[in-house]
Image (cartoon, rainbow, N blue to C red; front, top):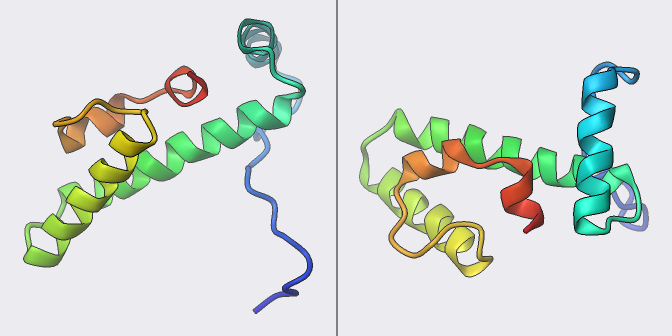
Length: 102
């Protein structure tokens, strides 16, 4: 279950900590969006991975329950401003970190 007073971490760290190309890209994103630290970038990256994993899962099925879940996921992304209204499920797979940060 876990301790209710201790919150869980909401991001995954990069698999290799000293990748020069990744560090350069993260520094550019930090300056462009005025972020406090790289943890905010990692949170956005984790959200992108979760959304695309869910979209891939939903694309594999065609039942009534999955249609409901597709509409819920697309509605959530439209309400948060990540995707426009009327977007398709395949558009979730094209998301990147900048779309979430914007």
